Length: 305
Length: 296
Image (cartoon, rainbow over all chains, first blue to last red; front, side):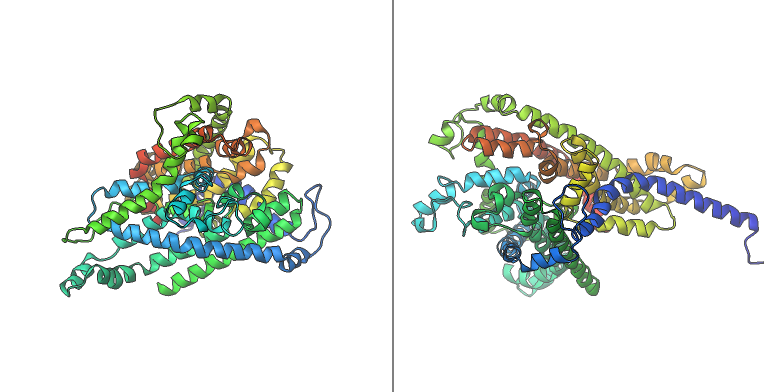
């Protein structure tokens, strides 16, 4: 007599159906917005990328993979992608370095720790419009950077276009502004990581007479391995998503396209040149890059665990 | 941080964790303080310099551009509010941000609760679908979203921005709320369920009071996201009267390139609410999002 009486089973099934309906009712409002704004456009982006379309009327001119071919044949596409990588090369070391440095310092016995932590995090919550204008002011030809270099005898480094107006300085300058706005975020991740390190390990190496550097090298750094991966991956992903600061500080891709990146390129193609199909193809390329990086990260994390 | 994905991840970890310093008994070297001071200077100087301009007559931003203001000159704010139209922009920003925060938080709570506490077929699938949203950058969907809003005839209305921001706010919200609700002890809800308490009442009377800090933290996060957002207003709002604060400020500086005094005032109007709320709520930020988020 192991079977559950029929009535009970039926009641269980009814209860499970009711639970399903209730759950659906809870999820539906979120799903409706999310579906309209994220899921459907996701499919649309892929669909539009197969058409030659100026954005007016329904897309009819099916061109298959032509938009992708066009992208891969377009030198500007590769230049933009290169700019994303240059951005990464400049901002990532700063974000990781400054974030790690401030986290390690703040983890020690510091007076005013809470205040400093709040201060370092302040740029992270600023609007991109605010960050852009603050740095336009800093970089102005009469601004502190230029005058500072002049006064310290490094005047030859400056230029008359202002930093963001000069084709070779614009991209690094904006990347530094972005790093300023972002390092506080890596700091809190590193801080959380340092907290997870067993204090006994520090005691152990101290008994062996380890100094500050050795404590950092042999306890902190190994303890932060997984957290560092997280910061790095987020930084790499972020480097492909830059838009606001470059759009505001160096409009239209900058002087001679010197600050064109993937995100701005797809924006200008679609909204200034009405090349919606081509823009959509660039969006899909961007998404594939992001998905690939996220997937890679998840794989690495899985293997480590 | 200008994009949703990394910002999302950022704030998941951002909150202030009460620090338990490793048991170090030696005295902190002076060098540490010097370095910390330098970093603090680097952090605060760019903000401070632009804030200064807000409190000076415009002529001073030319004659002594980077000096601290001589007096507390408030006329720039009055002029920015009226002549610079920042009053309108401010109101527009409020009218977009408030519905975004309320709707996204409530819907995140509902969906997060269902995914965490109700056992039903397909819950895993729904979770995966929402999680995918965490990875999708706003820029990649600009084109189809623009078309969607145009077809719905919502371009140049607040609705377009509100709906888009809610949609992009939800994956993170659902993710965080689910993680938080999962961390709650189940004995209480199980008992109440036995007594025939409905799920909605369970959420309202038991789960919600226990997760108020997380809800507040999430609300703050979504406020910052919506208030600071530049991209959606940029592509959806075309008329001058509809602009939000960040968008209005950027157009203003494009038109009056040399009026740094009013620019500074506009910058403060954007920054001040965020900074005040952030400082007021940062303790909830801690317990809320990190507690929930890192456990998920």
